[in-house]
Length: 121
Image (cartoon, rainbow, N blue to C red; front, side, top):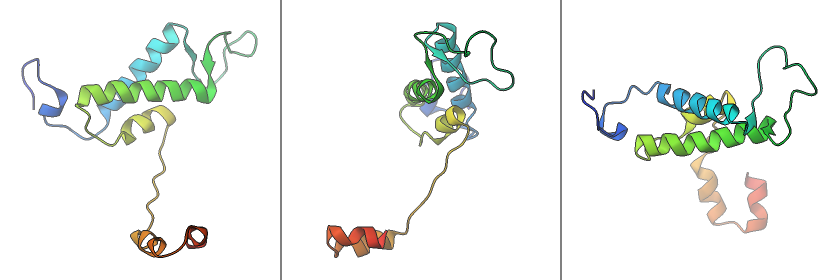
């Protein structure tokens, strides 16, 4: 593990728990919310007054997407452009769904016309 300062995150041992992604995402979300750029969804009772949305701020999916994109960028820069980004996406959206397809689908589609690909998939 890194001892002194000045080390790049990519140069020190990683825990793999996603804690840096969670911290980065929550920090980005807090800054954007504090500066009036986004209204983020809350758990529990919505804020009082109107519809809970301030004029000029992003809300809902747009707000969460902005937080995600900016957090991905910041985390990527801090980590030295390594990692899948699943941890930041999970911290932003709450979960990720990953589906893997069979490589044989690619082999089969290589010898079939484009009109037949939909039948294979």
